[in-house]
Amino acid sequence: MNPLAQQLNEAIEQENAHVYSMLSGIGKAIYFPKEGILSQSAEAKAKAKKFNATIGIATEGGQPMHLKVIQDTLSSYEPKDIYPYAPPEGKPELRTAWREKMIEENPSLQGKSFGNPIVTNALTHGLSIVADLFADAGDAVIIPNKNWENYELTFGLRRGAEIVEYPLYNEANRFNSAGLRNALLSQKEKGKAIVLLNFPNNPTGYTPGKEEGEEIVAAIRDAAEAGINVVAVTDDAYFGLFFEDSMHESLFGKLADLHPRVLAVKVDGATKEEYVWGFRVGFITYASSSDAILKALEQKTMGIIRATISSGAHPSQTFVLQALKSPDFDAQKQEKFEIMKRRANRVKSLLDSSRYGEVWDYYPFNSGYFMCLKLKTTDAESVRTRLLDEYAIGTIALGETDLRVAFSCIEELHLEELFDTIYKAVLEVSGKA
Image (cartoon, rainbow, N blue to C red):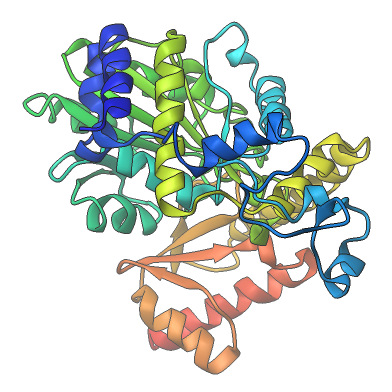
């Protein structure tokens, strides 16, 4: 094993042996090279005032070389903030700004010990880093039965982890904290579990209430006290889009200092929060009372980034940073939030109007981009294809009965037509039209 990796492992194990045992094989082996090209380039940047012949970019006239046809479209930005490589851990100013934003929006983080967010190539990349660092073949990854299909690819297919599902809702149509607790405790023999908490949930658009959130935290604490090392990951892709009386914070704050056997990891990003899907700017943040562990996990994360994408895109990091610093940012974001909230409320009013008879139920939703219908009289795939082929309407079929509808991308004035047409298609497919 590389001596640098060994040093990081020793630092983690000395501070918290439970966290060390959470690491996967590659998680133990990975490190960030301190004597490679990047570290030597960084040293040269500080000292090579005459000529710096280390970096793999081209310069001209004392600034990064660039094409006028590109710079003309980006003339609001200095070439130095667009063209050079960003550091593997991300643009320092952006990391600081995002951390400040996290604390402002999550008061439960006040006084908690957590690291500086590390920039990822959006949330999927952040989740894949979690998978690489902590998931070995056979490790349990616990998710609800209503989940984002990419979890299976990221943790199951890529890393060989065992996907363990529990029902998202209980009989009262609330979050099934008892199911989560049972799934966790079923891993006592393995002594390790990775839990993914995705709120607002994709595909249902559900966020638990405050009491349910406390139950989730208690379930994870119970597992830790039973001797299970828990990597508790909050997938906060749709953070902030809370339209009703649900939790309005990430559970990351509650999990940050929960138990020595719990490692809290937050994966979030500008992707959906700031409506910049194509920018691919995300973050991964670790919580620990030990600075040594935070520094070691940051080094290992940088090693994964260096070994895969080397670093994230610099222009999009600059764009997001500029937005966060703008005095108009909060007002513009609130304007878009209100549009999304009105769409969600309109969908709920349509579904509660009794106009659609008995052909479907809908799963509770109160946040995010989506909602899910539970069809009663026919299968979801038949309805999906009918809508697509006959009415040029796209929806997502999930399993036998569930049809996901993204109200986020439908103007409010078109929502009635959308659901009327879905209803019509259900009747046609079930032979009741």
